[in-house]
Image (cartoon, rainbow, N blue to C red; front, side, top):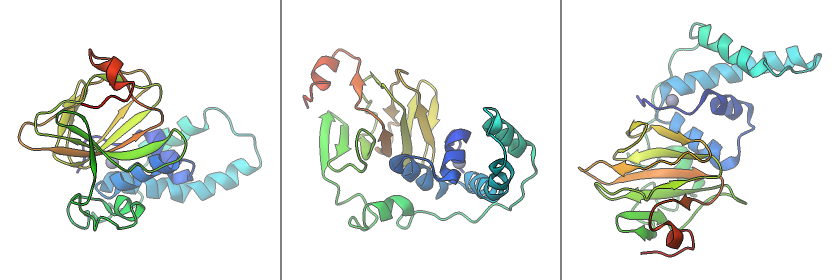
Length: 220
Ligand SMILES: [Zn+2]
C-alpha cells in the first residue's frame, strides 16, 4: 500500500472530472496501486450526485470543499476497499499503459530515452497539451536529479525502484507533490534504478551550478 498519496483536493477534482488530463492520468495510475484512494474516490463520486442536487438551488460557498472533505474524513468507510489491480506486467499501471496506446506492450523496453545529465533520462515522448505534460523520468541507481524549482505544480509517481528527497522516501505507487517554487532534490536508491511518471505544468528551472546550461536546453 502506498504511503504517499495525491492531495485530497486532487482526488476531489479527479472525482469531479475537473483535473487536467495529465494530472488525471497520474491520479488514475496511483489508484491502480492504492485501495485507500480508490475507496476515497468512490465515496466522492457517490456523494457527488447528492451534492449536485443540494447545491443546485443555492450559491456555492467558499467553504464547501473544506466542509465536504471534513465530512468525508469523519465518515466511516462506506465502501469496502476494492481489490488491488496490479499493473499488467508489474511496471506500467493500466491507465498509463492505455494512454500510451499499448504501444510499449506495458513495458519500458521500447522507450527512447534522452539523457539530461549522467544517470538521469527523460522519455523521448511526452503526453499533454500546452504547458502541461507527462513523461517518464529514469534515475540510475544512486543518481540524483539536479536541483531545480518550478513555476508551477509538479508531481512524480514511482513506477519502479524508489527515491528520496528532502521530504521523505517514495516507493512504487507513491506520489510526490511539489508546490510552485519549492526547491527539491530527488536521489534514487543505491540498489537499483528508479522510473517515475513525471507530470508538470511548466518547464523545469534548474537552480544548481549547471542550471544556466540546463535551462538553455544543453544536455550532457
Ligand atoms: Zn493513495
